[in-house]
Image 1 (cartoon, protein in one colour):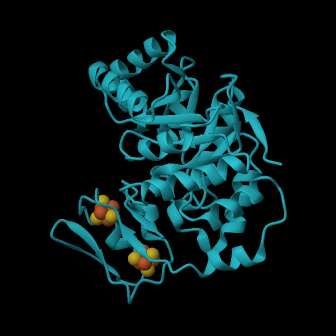
Image 2 (tube, rainbow, N blue to C red; image 1 turned 180 degrees about the vertical axis):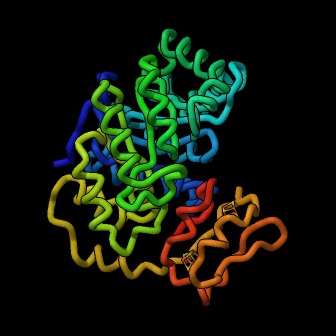
Length: 316
Ligand code: SF4
Ligand code: SF4
């Protein structure tokens, strides 16, 4: 049976497995509308009731398609980079319209770094608090890849939920180790903050040891839920079974392990070159403003991804 938890003090009941929808959309697999929606439906049938999306992801149409005939709507979390009141209002309205829902359960500031960025987004946050009063959202929060932002939330009791990056190797944590992130998250959870983690597989870098990586996050009681990106029916079925504590299919596990993988550079790479100095194989160089991977030299070790400040390097 799928496990459900209450997200901090919000009263919102979510499946421990949250379907991270980034993987479905134009920034990643760009699945056909029906195919992406079908994956969400498979997850619903297995007990998943929690979806994560964002203004940026372009995945509202998949969600709209998947939930249009459902009597019980899943819990939906979305987020926006907007930092102005007007911009955040537009972002929320876009989410409501494009998903055709009366309210978005959780709406967050996207990717906060520290108390400084949180202060810079205050006007947008204030709008979200008003939207909560008006019943357009049920909980307000932010997502982050930094320990500093998690620590900043300790002095923000007005925040309901955070969505931090947590994995057993700290891949993608921009300012600390896996242990430092976990310590901060535990402290925050003790205050009653709802926590749903992202990137348990480090953006794909931990797939070769996914059993260890999943065990790590599932054992952390401070994580009310964990968002996982999925792109095939096999992955959805496998992860649902894993999170439900059921026996997982060894055949499916083998299919997933055998999946042809490669390092992919996301479109938002700025060509800063930081990652190139961390590749032990010399497989990265910057060309025309973006990093380029020499696939014949890349051993998919995953070291580079941990050093990209913008999480642009992912293994699929
Ligand atoms: S992948 Fe990241 S670290 Fe590498 S050049 Fe692009 S932005 Fe910089
Ligand atoms: S995954 Fe490893 S080998 Fe491949 S580019 Fe990154 S650091 Fe280099």
